[in-house]
Image 1: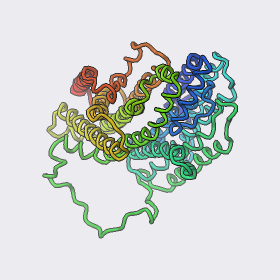
Image 2: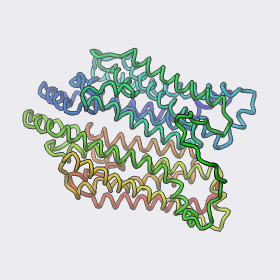
Image 3: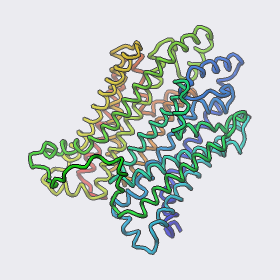
Image 4: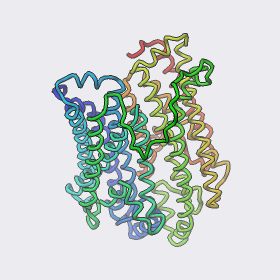
Length: 549
């Protein structure tokens, strides 16, 4: 049955993602809702939470945070946007990925028009997003019933629909961008950068007064206008219609461009976006002595220069932005500490610490840095797996290059890129701290930025290991799901008072709090050892396996 139409085949391919993302985020909501009563046991605790949330308005607007629905919306509402990663990745390769592999040529030989094929694929993605939203809604509703929260099934379903709509916007954006790029990785990378940019753009009006007009250019702004878990606030139908209309506009433009271009080709940019034309020069192959052709390592390094630059800009820029936000929060948090002694006990329960120090506030935000770097590593592990699946490694191995040298050369280039990202992130953070006069311990700042490197290498080594047995889609999907699980354990676990045994299951746990306590040397060495073991097993498998199997 699943192979009787393009729609059903595409939906079948998304079955694991529907269950993984839907149940995963749904369980997050259920667990947090179930734990809320223990955090709001007394009127004093509620008042302390309201005061605390007022200092973090840049993160999310605090609305009825002393209620279960309000607390979940404030603390984890923005975290739910991690769901948008799946549609932007799958939509970037929905058409462009099949064109790269050549499978779209075969599909279009069937008696099905281009537009029908594209529409069926897009309809399957929307069905998957709605399925994820439904699973989230049902589990959130179950969590609300367990504590007798003030929202019901209808509000939970509206929340799931809102999440599906914001995911659809970024999926449609990736589909449109893929019409202008030769590779789907480029489209997904650009869309991921725009996702981060729009999140920051939505924060601007909560940081700088009288700038709400600027935040209106962000789809995330309209996502945040609806808070179904807070009955007193409710859902904004106009905002949800705006997200739906934006999805239709972006996806409609993408399909119109796809129907009018050559398969494997790209759409020419409008004249005002084109670079000035130069006199045509005959295309010359790279000279034999070009630096990028001297070894597998240098060639691999040249291949990842562009994505490394973009990811460096995103990660380093995010770190600098966090420093600016911490400077803004510093004074108000110190005042709260003096006026409300109960806040110290509350912060301890939700995973915080001494709120009178800059390092404590920044350390809570810096936990996102290793996750961003590991996401970059996932994209590069995906490139390695795709090169083998698409037959590009066969060309390299037809030259007198040992298999082990090929794999280690590629991984060495990825290691170099990861180290460069870490060093430039350190430079951006130090510069932002100097400009804002935020006092931080220099040694701990170096430890906090550079200790993200081993975690990036760990996820990359695991991706290389998985590629020995799995296809590209499954390899990337499993790595992404593993990253989400680690994020879930590290970000949510402390707030739910999970045991250390569970927290140790996340690689992010071993990042520790270097801004407060310096480099966790033993944990860092342990992560490196596991990464080396995974790389050794990946090398052993690659040397002995049949290429493409």
